[in-house]
Image (cartoon, rainbow, N blue to C red; front, side, top):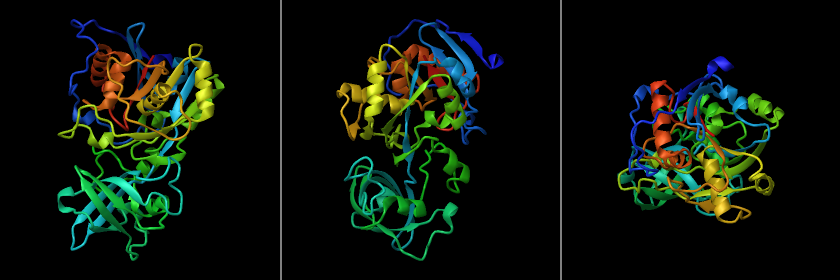
Length: 379
C-alpha cells in the first residue's frame, strides 16, 4: 500500500489572490481525461489527498481510503437512488423527442412508488423549439429495453413550457417507477458519450451500493467509489457510516448554459434521518465528520443552517469561497466541471489557491475527471 502513495509539496506559486472564485473559473483539461467508463473495480479509482493544514498533495488510491480516515471518523453518504429519468419519445407526425424528468411537482420526497405518484413533473425537453403546450409524446423504449411492450401507446403530455423547462403529465394512475423501468434509461451527463444509449455497465455502475430512496437524476458521484468490501473494511476499523438523502437535480446538465447565473443551483429535495442528526450533533467537535460528495455536504450544511429540521426539505444553498462550513470536517469528492457550483464548493472548502494547484496536479498526473473519474479527499 505504501508504494501507491506519492507526496508532492504544495508549491507557493505566485501571490495569493484571496478566496474569490472568478466567474467561469477554468482549468486546462485534455478531452481524453474525461472518463467515459468507470474503473474496472468500483473501488479501483485513484485518490488525490489534499492536506489543508500541512500543505501537501499526495497521490493515493480509493482502496487505501482506510489509511486516510481515523478510527472514530463519521463517514456520511447520500443514499438517494438515481431513477431512469431519461425518456425517449416520438412526436405526432414524426420526429424524435426527449424528456428528462427532474422532480415531481406534488408529493413528498419518498412517494415515487405510489400508484399515481408524481403525475406531473418538472422536466427538461428537447427539441424545445418544436414542442408546444398540449402536445402529446408517445414513449419509445430505449435500445437496451427491446423487450418493452412497444404496441401499447404510452403518452406524456406537455402542460407548460417556460424558459427551457417544461411541465409534463404522465398517464393518470401510472406507477412512476414502473413506467420508468419500462421506458426510461439512466440520465447520464452529456460528457459521457453514449450514442446508442446507456450500457449494461452504466445501469450497474451509475448507482451507489447504498442507493435506496429513488429520486436523483444524476448520481452522487463520490459515492460511486465505495464498494461493499471497502465499507466493510471501514466499519471494521471503527469508522461510523451515516446516511442522508439529497435528490440530485439538473445542475450537471445545466452547467455552463448561456443566460444562467454562474453558480445557480436548482432547488433540491433533502432529508436528514433523526439517527444521523443525533449522531452528528453528538460527534461535532469530538469526531471528524467526513462528507462523501458535494451533495452530502450541501444536505448537512443546509440542515445546520435551518436548525436541523425533520422531514423532507428543499435547498438551493450555494457554497462558494467565503462560505463557512458548520458541519463538515473532511470531504471526499470527484473532479468537477470548470465554472460549476460543485467546483465552487471545493474551492470554498479547500481554498481557491489550493484547489487550483490540486487540479493542476491531477491533470499533470493524468487523473480521470468527472462522474466516472478519480477522486479527491480534502482533509
